[in-house]
Image 1: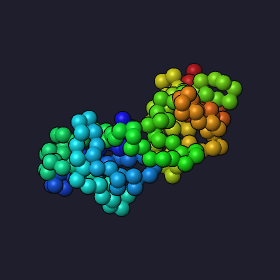
Image 2: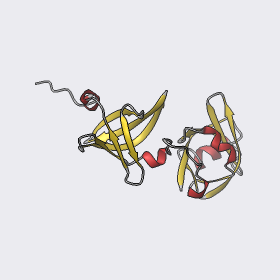
Image 3: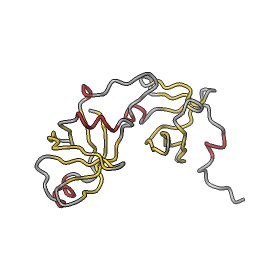
Image 4: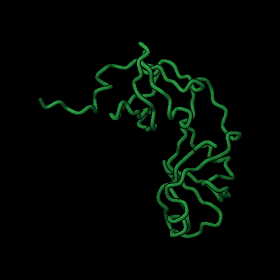
Length: 168
């Protein structure tokens, strides 16, 4: 199973919920008819309002039901329904848990999440310190999904940006 979104708060009174996409191609939702939450559920519809994605699951018809049964759940689909990607495109779920290695072969951290801010930003854990690395060719030189590694060439200042300040 792969995650394609995370359910946020319900909206309205009909059981609809906001979806935080875990894919850069939000139109992929148009083809989804069934999801796993973790149990299999039939999709009534996905709709797009401005920059929001709204999901309606069959059988969830009130705000209260949506809040109790859907809020916070991941939206998953079978691996067989993955979209075909072009070269240099990756699923967010494939990048999570990739080890970041600098061009000298040193471990820099592990990808924990992806944030969108104009372009994707890798959020990584570097020995308990969160680091943010723009997911662009300038910094991310090689992505090996099978080997779960991303080779990065980033300035040292970027690694220490969120480090505790030494007050001595």
